[in-house]
Length: 171
Image 1 (cartoon, helix red, strand yellow):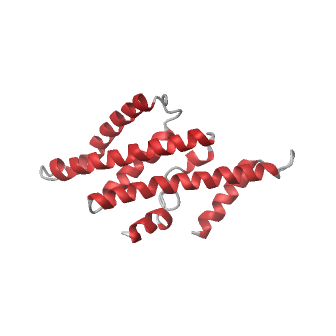
Image 2 (cartoon, rainbow, N blue to C red):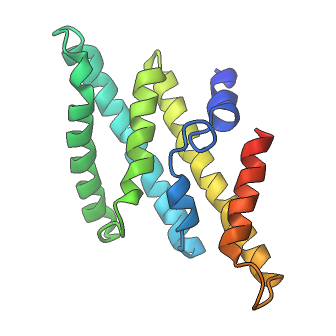
Image 3 (cartoon, one colour):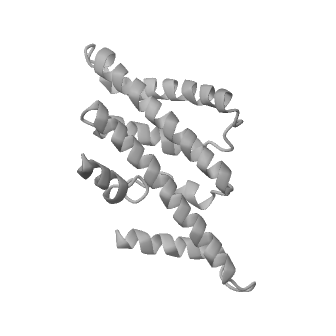
């Protein structure tokens, strides 16, 4: 089980290996409180969706030999639970549609690569946690580079892209 955690958190991170959420990393502009609220909401939403979709696939779609169409049901369940979570948490509508990409693609990844219920939940948890840890790294790099940039020099966006390239090469 620890191999799965280390593999999906570090080795096959959704950002490093699959490229999920790279565009969201560079446009992330939330404060610390909304960052942690969003991370918790995304984690709960993702794990709930994985649990519901895994039960749906295992007990309904697989016996009927139509498990190939699970992404359609995943979209429907994800949309319904996203709307419901926005009503419950009163967080308002997500700012852009990129906020939906990371949790939804993490759900699909966890359901496709998980061999049991627990492994699917662990994969989904590691995907979302790795994404938000990487977001913290990018936020800290952006803050650090803004301290040393001259007005006529590079913009912080350029330094962030260079830093991402170095991190990708390291893996």
